[in-house]
Image 1 (cartoon, protein in one colour):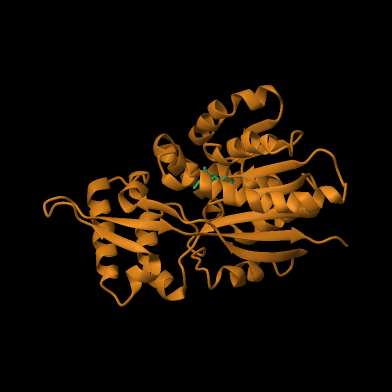
Image 2 (cartoon, protein in one colour):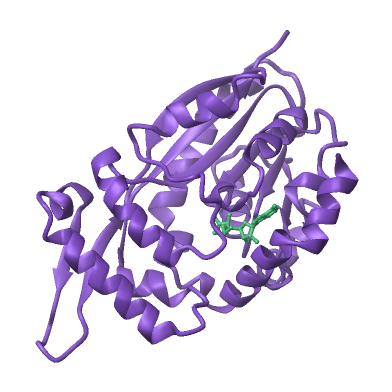
Length: 302
Ligand SMILES: C[S@@+](CC[C@H](N)C(=O)[O-])C[C@H]1O[C@@H](n2cnc3c(N)ncnc32)[C@H](O)[C@@H]1O
């Protein structure tokens, strides 16, 4: 399995995805959701609750965790800085993997002090190259990287395999509030999300069924979805990070599409979108609350 996927990683779509993120790297941290402390704090509150019980079991002393698609390393940084302050996970060891060299370059800079103290290792690897590392991690986190994985079932199977018994996989994904808004919003995502797996479009209503379907042959219990703190942002900030070749035309097209959708019955209200036009001559923009759901997949003991 390893060689086959490694080959794909080198030869086709994954090269495209890593190239997309190489081009997104410089402006990635300007995306409001990436560094939002409340959003990160909410994710880690969930992990904290899990770890409290996990530690009671006294299974291991040194928690090991893996951040899949670590990007610019913001999740790892928050984790390694904040947790010891709260008196937990002083001995945690973290690994971050990603296929984009430029995203990892930024992560490496951010995390160099932790790397020196051997608390974290960052490497340029794909999820599909991990399958030989049986039962190596206590938890695995995937924030907004899952919808870029080309092979849904295989990626979940590998994550489950490399997890220790009773360990958890945390998948955080952007969602639409419901199926009605998702069906409309999908048009925007299709225009915007270069490098997205076209099978992963999620709403709060359907995210659980989605993971039930793709984990039915795996020994994983699904907990959630947990709705996370929404992050306010401007649509223009969101689009600024996308490496469109014809940026201005594409951004205008997307903004027009959102304007059209907002005229539909209750769409803007349900989605939490507000149109802002400061001056009639200025380009339109929209305030939006980026919603995310967290799904926990717990590896059951036999
Ligand atoms: C939207 S970014 C999220 C970054 C980070 N998780 C965060 O929340 O800030 C998605 C990341 O997933 C990475 N990625 C995509 N496919 C991958 C794969 N097959 N294996 C590992 N990383 C992958 C991309 O290179 C990119 O850096």
